[in-house]
Image (cartoon, rainbow, N blue to C red; front, top):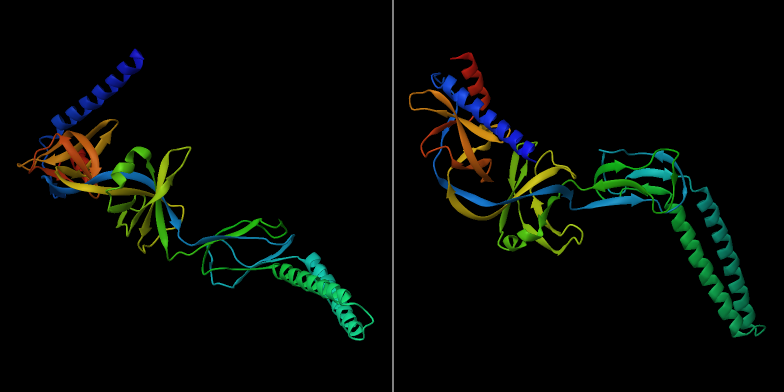
Length: 337
């Protein structure tokens, strides 16, 4: 343990020394047309973040209702379909034979009922025989209807307008009742579901707004509504929070998102997250001095606040100028211009 502590201390001191050397070597370099921002305390939203996933409000999985081989597939993942479009056909010859047998039984029961009804009218048979013939006819009719429905289930159609998210079968696969065939979702209405730990539930009761961040896309949107579900997972002790997602491009179910719940506001000194240079556990920014010279300044940072900002706890003073493009600043320093 002592070795690990000493090793981490050496890494930290070495990184700190590197920053110090960079500052000493580059303090005399003049900045040329670098984008900057003047830092000063200002009112920002404060709260806490939570990991989340994009979900479709309307999503369905189409499953097989009869057994048979998959004969033909008319749709694939990523395809947009309309309600009623043909997706797949199943070889349901057994269902066809069962339907024909049910039709024959129904015809026979109907003839028997009519014959019994005539004989009862002529008083050759009792009314009890007519009741039995009627019951046999009703049972045959129900059996015929069920067999006809099974035959219709061999043709799979889209139940909603939407996009096919996944196709679960290939031609020749055996479809069995309950086996999923396609997963569809309606892209026009999406939501974000975040997982909030139990110790945050007290804060969640005061949340009235939230912002949704898509880190990979570099986009932020305001949530339309925030709904805390009244149950918690017994294994993880987290609760689900649903947030409505406005209509935005390039969003699909399953995408990662980060929700920033807003619990209040406060005045803080911040820097853009994109301006921060990180080397291990050390963070720094390029500062443009009043004499137009650059220096690399080590900072002590707090939590992320607002939209793309990080609170500065130490290392900067109000009114100083921070370079917002650290890559260009590093190149300029390296070239010595």
